[in-house]
Length: 194
Image (cartoon, rainbow, N blue to C red; front, top):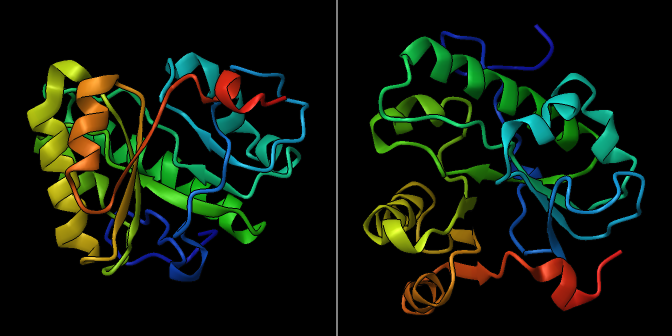
């Protein structure tokens, strides 16, 4: 076993002292700019899984970008996804995130998962974890509100959720919800990122 665990599936446990309590800008989706670029902000993985599978095999790629923070990879999961696949996806994203933590990268836990599987997707996340991320979608505002409430219940009143994209309705929901921080999905062009 590579890292310590607190669960029966040996899913690595994240380090509380390496959570991304502040959002490092810019926030850029993996694969939207050159992977060889120096990027001092936060990488997010709310993209097609194929864009980050090479990164799962070689997590050091992200370390070489000199980023300050990263959200966990967001594997595509659905309500009908078998539990075994959910556990496997959770293991892979925690393993990669813990590898990044060991290299000094702060992490945000991915909340963009089906509510039915949320308990499995939180394996390896210590109680009191306060740094989360999700993808905003205008068509799923109730689910987003549920994710934001979950973050507060897990991490307490100081929990923050980086909400990536989704447009004006998502932005309005974030502005009215404590701890939610809306980041437009086009930040790379807004910030003039590399």
